Image 1: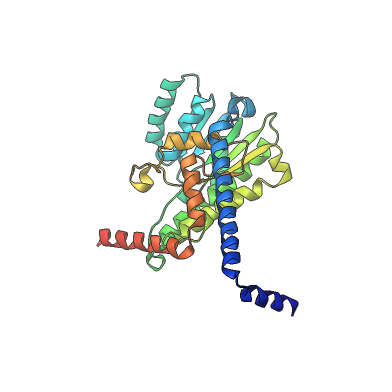
Image 2: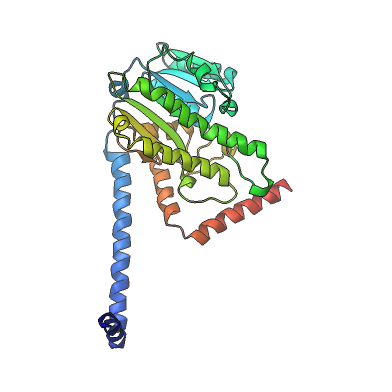
Length: 318
């Protein structure tokens, strides 16, 4: 009853408008201060804090294994890690493109060793798939795993081909789990630290219409990464990082260009700059700002955006 009397007297007060004004003002100041704090953190992480020396941290003569290596972000990681002195295992279904990339790496630094393995992760749910793969890798000192391979969809769920759904789940989920499961035991025996980078997506943080399976698979990747990074026997010796990437100029988006769209090497470099500090990141400061905006969007506005995008896509197809 006392609470009701307090509320009643508050609204009967002649200065109620003034009180409401100050409450609203306080709320606005709080939100602005919170946003400014987040912007400062983004600024600090990208422009003040120095990246770790990865070769010193993980071992300069060790190997980095990159899935989906032949194009896009995977290629960016290969080139960036090779420039920092790591030998590279290239895993991709396109063996020939991997060979072209190896030539680029050799021109950049002919002391870098490479191993090209042609493999199609659409088959990764097959029994013994990873056992057969690791027969080719057991002799290597692998210090960094970049789980980059992925498959994208944009479709009405009821129209989506079931084979495509199966492939999305096989490509986006199975490698993330089983490559980490196969490598973590050997990583724990190394004298230096190791790292696992899993490529998630900014859209994984909220339900996403018309990309339901893709977004859900990336949410799986993100949660897997965060969970592994909190296991004590892993976190002490292995840096696990989830990269919640936004748009990168790759085949996935028909190599579109724009201020907020990163080049693959730019994205990879920004991500590696966060390695050893965070468990999750959007990488580049541009994507960190996009994430800040995306998280604050009202649900109705966000869904409306995807509805409009799907209508445009339907019009182009028809």
